[in-house]
Length: 561
Image 1 (cartoon, one colour):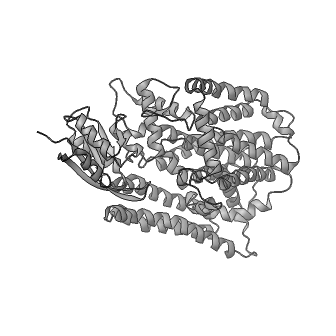
Image 2 (cartoon, one colour):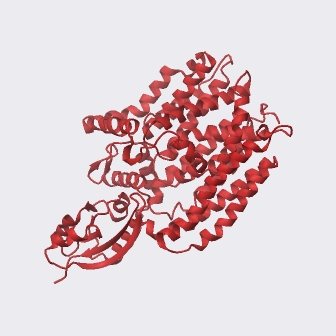
């Protein structure tokens, strides 16, 4: 099979994009409405956006009374806009899923942009398969369901990289239009407003490596950098100026000086990990396709040099992947989703290699690399599937029938996919792998995770408070449990405090006050009551996955006379 597309083959029909959009939504929707807010980032983003709507202040970003100056305002504007559009004339209850809509849309756009880029590089079949891999890989499925920045950021990065690739692949043409430069700079400006300079890190390192490899960079003039910088300034500067004035420079001190530099210099939020972490976790984050990515390495290595559209496209993808990956590995702070911006290029190269059966010929040793790749892929995807089955037992002490029924189905489908790829029946292999992912995600997000009551401590608290709330405006003081999801579910006025202050809160509000007290704060809480006996209204246990600790919490009201 040739990897060189002809003019017509490099265009995906509209129906193919529509099919990818539908598949993406079907993969992303299970659990979208049912999963409670995740701690901590999702709940913080959603709560800050909710407070924007409440206050009408669309410049400053706050979580309760605390300034939240770690990320720019773009995602908050998108979340408030989505929630406002869905808020009818009579209003609607505060729901986490309305704040997740920008992430869902961003994830779908990233899939479509990956397909477009892959089609222009290697043909429509490659583009479609690359989009399919992005839609069904583990990490994008997680980000599509969370109300935070990364899925939206990915869409801006892929659109910008698609524009950059268009200019690079057509750099020998006499003329270039304005479409690619405009798309690049608009995506860059939007990406900066979403999460700062990450978008420029990816595109900048891509362009730098290409310039070094080719020993020429004249094609970059076609980006119209002066006009482009003006576009970026027009998009990002108004809010940056407004927040600088409003906070007297505190935003930049916090976002750049503390948040960004803290990640670069040291492991922030106890997430400091050594280089190699992303390579080790890739077998889960890009599952179920991670083993195919390893099989694609010989194909990419063979086609990296020379002239022609295939070599140019391969070099572009390599320049997209390697420098950004090395930066992410070098930065001490590591989270599983940080390498997501390079996954579209990995998907494109993997799909292109699949068109040529990963360079496996009958006369060549066939099973060495294939065995290693499939073993690593099976460990990653298999461990993930087994974990979904056992977590309900570990947390709640029960066997989840959906998880148990799902386990053999997913593993058999995955094994079938591996067998089909071994037989060089790649298209059927992609279908089986997609089916394995679809069953896993539908069962995991749609049934298993929402049903594990122990991990959703804030949801249990919200139910307990709703059943026992003495007044419509009762405020809860939480002692020893301070996850942001509690604020999102119980209200902005929720007090995150300690045992003595929770007791004081009940004393100040004897009729309507409530105190949620963990077992670790129980002694301090009772000591501050000085012999008064609070009224227990509910008790529950759970597992805080952020701290790794089990908690027992009791909801108290003030003693009644």
